[in-house]
Amino acid sequence: MGTTEVGFDLLEREWIPVRRGASVSWVGLRELFTQAHDIDDLAVSIPPAAAALWRVLYALAARITGLAPSDPAEHPSPDDWLDRRFHLLDPAEAGSGRFDPEAIESYFAQHSEAFDLFGPRPWMQEPALAQQCPSSSGINKLVFGRPTGNNQVWFGHFTDQLPEPIRTRDAVLHLLIQHYYGPAGKCTARTVNGARFSNSTKGILRSTLSYHPIGNTLFESLLAGLPAPVGNPEQEPGLCPWERTEPVDPLGLPPRPSWPGGLLTGRSRHAVLLCPDATGEHVVDAYVTWAWRQPAAEVPDPYLIYQLSKDSNLYGRPAKVERSLWRDLDALLRSTSTSSAQPRRPTAFATLAELPEQVRARLRVRAYGFDQDGQTREKRWFSSVTPPVLNWLEENNPRIPHQIGLLRERAEAVGTRLEAVLARAWQQVLDTTDRKKRGPWPERAAQLYWPAAEEEFWARLRAEKIETSSAAFRTLAHRAINTVLSEAEGTKPAVVKALAAARRNFDNPQWGKENR
Image (cartoon, rainbow, N blue to C red):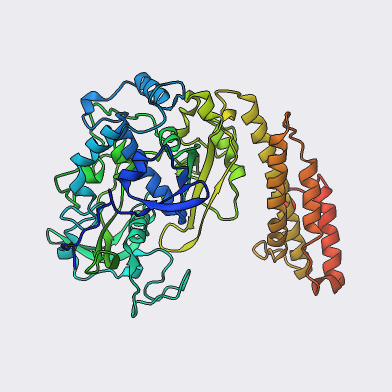
């Protein structure tokens, strides 16, 4: 199986879900950019696919607007770049607020062949896999959420014995997830120049949280989310995969992930080839394997918060389904933090203070997360969005992000203490000092405390003056303690005694690390 005579033109075919008001429709890339000023937002329901698609669209927006010309010699200086983006977004500028139709047509005409999903240069795929792999990987290997081999069922009952095709427009989204969030470890074997390997390294966004500024229109979101030039764009072409006309050597060094195309779209560790049915309306099989044997140059992704490990190594903040977006807000608003992890805001946020004030005042932040391990296991994906918060950037008002950080730290300190005293209480019931035996109480309390703490957090931010005391969070913690007993547990004297001790310990300032 491999490329066929059927086609699926990503410029014209309707494969991207978008929202206009309360309605959702599907558009191709040409309509998306032509109508971006009338489209409210993307409506991609799978968070990791949305995070990947935003990066593709940012790269296209940079090319179409001339903020990242295809000719490196034409790249604007850093100051000119900021000025150009400002004018494109400034409501006072004639012709602002939308993409230039002629620029859209010019770019897509230049690369039209590369946007055919099943053509000779299939978009974001490697046609040679049909010859380099002894067998295909199966459609279930492509589609995230489906089990493969002996893995457990996650979102649906699919088996390798009865593979179910997927609509092509949906397959494109899973193709993107593979490129950005694909697993490490065993994969379909691939032989290149006599060298055969059957393992891959993980996708660059695997297990991370991705943060994106969201405006009133898709045009605003795309321009606001563009990362400023990094490196030497006038010397390094920074090509997107679909802009490359020469094949790459999978056994050689990967192209340097230069701004913007290489940085945003050219860092995949996986090679994929989709196999359509006779109509091109469904994908029935796929090859999913390794893309490179050599490591790529390490560069920060523009949409991740980076922080220090205990060994002082930078890594992207991991996605944890139980951790809400409000706990990351001060890290998004401040360039640095005094906490031990020293979180650093996404570099795409570094120039948001340079946007027109009317635009910045309405920007929200959306986070996309995929809770995974570093190898093959997937837990859950999720997304969330803030109200407009980017007028609180430290460049505009350094006091407010500091207060938000204090408020978050105090809420987290209460939550951590709450779970610690309840874990100790459970150990008291079991008459054990084994700290691994935390019991059900910390989780039950956390399920009540953290949503309530989030409500309190946003209520404080809506007030004219942000009050940072922990008293209200302590009250919420006591309410959580009072809810952890099950009906059966409440009849046991030892349990009631342990929970009473938990209440006392929570309020006792001398109960500290040595008792946890």
